[in-house]
Length: 315
Image (cartoon, rainbow, N blue to C red; front, top):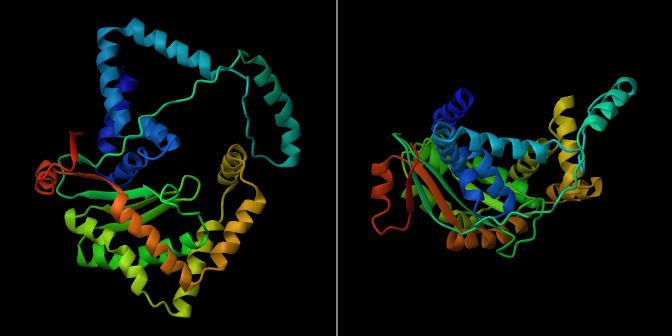
C-alpha cells in the first residue's frame, strides 16, 4: 500500500512541473495503440487508475494480490523473450554463460496473442488542476492526413521551434516554453506550450503556422543552420547505456541502417519547397487536429463557453 501511495503522490506532484509532457501523452493516446499504452502506464489515465487501485487495496486486498500474481505469470516467461546486453567483447565472454543460465531458469509457457483494442475516440479535452498557467497541446496523425514522412520535417520542426513558436508564444505570449514534436514512427505531430498564460490565443498561433510557412522566405544560411540543428539531434553523442537501448528499440521496430541513412539524406537534402509543401500538411492539423489543454478550472471554463472541450478534474 505504501508503494502504491508513493506512486500516486509522485504522479500528482509531477503534473504541473511536467504539464507539457502530460498533455502531449494524453493527446497522442488518441491516435495509435502505442500512444494509448503510454498514456495507460505513465499519463493521467495511470493516475486515475492508481487512485482506483488504492481504494481496491483497502477494500479487497486478496483480489488485488490475485491480479498481481496473474501479471507476474505473464511477464516472467522466457517464451518470446528478447535480452539486450551492452558490453564489450571481452566482458561478453563472462556475461553470456550467466545470462543463459538465468534465462534457462525462467518459466516457459505458451504465449497467447491478445491484441489490445484501445478506444481511439478523438476528443478535445480540458484537464483542470490548481495552476495559474496553462499547458496547451494540439496535434494530429499526419499519415492519416495523407502525409508521407520525410526527413525534411526534422528541419522544418527545428526552424519553427526556434523562430515562429518562440517569437509568438514565448516572447509575445509570455509562456515559458513553446515546442513542436513529430514522431516519424507513428506520424503524430504535436504543438505544445509550457507554463502558458494563454489558451485560445496559443491555439490560434498553432493554427496560423501553415500561413507562416507559406510566407516564409528563408535565406540559405538560415536553412543550413536548420539542417545542422536537425542533424545534430540525429547524431547526438550517446553513452553506452543509451546506445544499447537505441539498438534494442531499432531491433524491435525492424528499423535498419538503410532506413536511418535514407532519413538522414532527406534531412540533408531539405529545400525551401519542402517548407511550402509542409504548410499544406499543417493546414490539415488546423482543420482536423485534436486539442488537450491543462490549466485552472477558471481558465478552461473561459475558453469553453460552447462546450467544445470535454472537461475532467485531475487535481
